[in-house]
Length: 514
Image 1: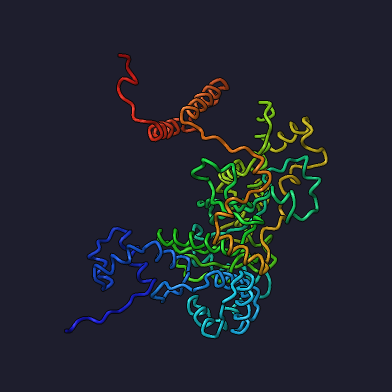
Image 2: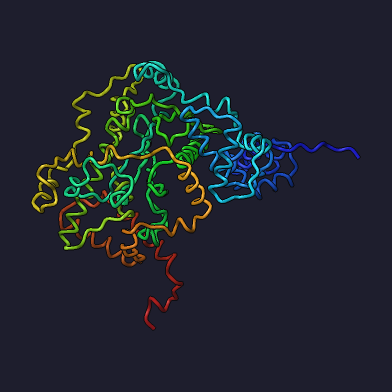
């Protein structure tokens, strides 16, 4: 009996077929375009989540046809993370060293029957498309010769190839999210890694494009994956993740970039993402379709990175001002002020929203991101980016003995500017990270002492939210403040829909007397 020979399809091609269906193409069209029968396509669609995850996260090389994983997945996960870090530091790696490291990780994971022979190493390299000669000799694509050479070569090429809206910069910063002005003096010149003050820190990744038209949702890294204050909260205004040190790690950064790449690819855009040589930034991220990751020269970020040229400082000025305003309101109401992570992420989003588009564009120009025939802003304009209402708040808080007279507004804003946001991971850190992913239940239950002391936030009912909205409208009217900027009509509609979803079905007799 004659018939067509069966040809297996790569994971990348399967993912492309699934995405075509998602765009609205009919199954008949996709089957004809990809040369597969309807039953085969249906099988791919049944496993579309696994296939798309495997391709988007580069779990396998693009030409792989099966999603067959290793028997000891935790050992592989540790080895991949260690290998990325070694390649980022240009450490030469060979097969025997890779095998030795795999045995060490198996021992640390408590796996006694792990057999790491040459065949296992070759299969590991094939599964992850690893070429040791290539992976650990490329390093990070930065020219030698300093920042000026980089600007005259790499940056000039990017500015010519991409429009301003398609050139992005991302950078991490540490934040003591509940630090009051009168507590800063006790922390000065102390490195925050462990201990009481480390529980009060977050790491934030901010990203925006060159013309300031696209401020991406902030990524916030905390110490507790599910703080008590997140109870009954279904959505956050930021991306939130957690690890034991609240630091950026390569797996988190890679996931962030891959999500950004998927969004840009869906929009049919090609963009450049400029980042620094942080240890948590992998030297290469395979499989990106829309994002070109470009590294800054080492140790020059303050001169060449827009986020370090004023954007982060402006963001922190807004955050501190919002936090101080919260303190004054709490004292006016004679309430105890206890900021938690939920309040912090809400203030982070508000502060980021307050950073103006012109501020971001000016900071890009100040860092040297200037297209031809475009003049950068004057220095006086750049200095004005940091202006805020901090002086007025400072005077009020000094009268309440909350702000020391020796502390300037600039010192308070920049207090945590040198906070560590990433560090080279030890083998123990790598194993702990892999184990925490495997056993998320134990990680979820781990909260800091201060979170245990904080009472969980009760669920707010739609009726209570409606009363609060009415009270706010009345306050604005009494203060002769125009309420057109607050979108009360939209908020009322949201509350009405929420009440309909949460309430039980009512009959006519509930509204009219018999």
